Image 1 (cartoon, rainbow, N blue to C red):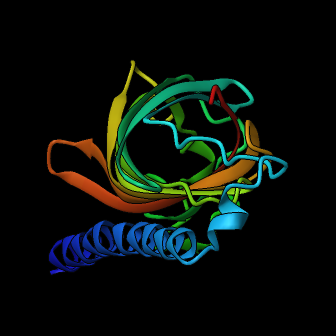
Image 2 (image 1 turned 180 degrees about the vertical axis):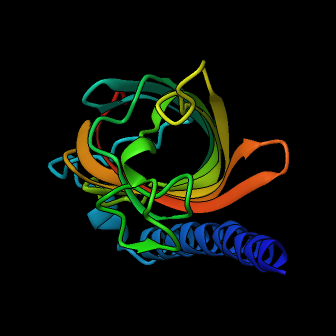
Length: 215
């Protein structure tokens, strides 16, 4: 029952992202077109006015999480809305497990069912992959991204007799703020950590990041 409720909530969040982000982007596009069409001709033809930069069709960038690094690419589908992918490696050094179970909770986890083994639950990210939608409005200081996340973690500290690789799958949201090319933000993950064949635990992780956009 708990697993069913988790997936129901996850699907609801993901569907909401797929609906809300395009609506926000489409609303921005409609407002922009309305403003342009209702601007006086003399104002539009004024050579002294600064011309608006063209909207890029492709976005390339790098995200840094102290040790961890990732590269992302996105393609514009409508004004302000992009679809893309991201691939990254190495741990998010300052990640924080907000919610977890017996095998994933850490000592500073806020919502936990069982912290008795928290000292052994050190998780080190090895690699990850994202599929996402990104809303990039006309304002340069904000971007919002959300989508599907899959990641591999090293959980060997719990398995003292050998290497233990576990995987995470779920949804994430990533807002960033700052300059046009350099922004700071965070990624909030929510999903299942698959520890063994029949063992899965819900967990939520937040990780700070620095983004560099090439465009």
